Figure 1 (cartoon, rainbow, N blue to C red):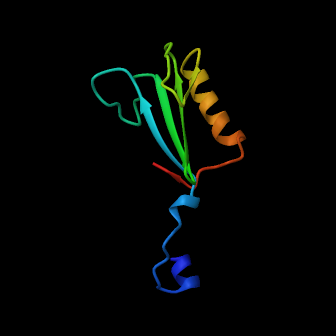
Figure 2: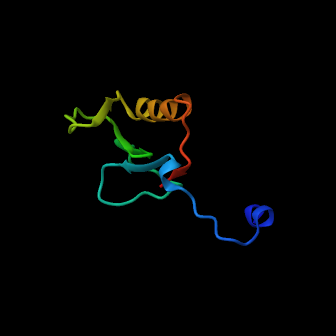
Length: 102
């Protein structure tokens, strides 16, 4: 409501090309989904597609050896802790936080 209070009720159309958008896909092994209170399977892969202006970048953090397609960066991690730590380190320390995460 703050935006409406400050700028009125007019539609504000964002310039999507200027936004840094991350699409994140998190994979775990197994046939069924775990609940947030009981994550019984480890995270095995995180894929992030970053889009900004007319450029895009795909980064895959994974536990198993993988030969990425052209234009994809693969970061092999030793275990789940390393995978999550590396992902969070990249998120925080690149200094280019996403505007929108899906």
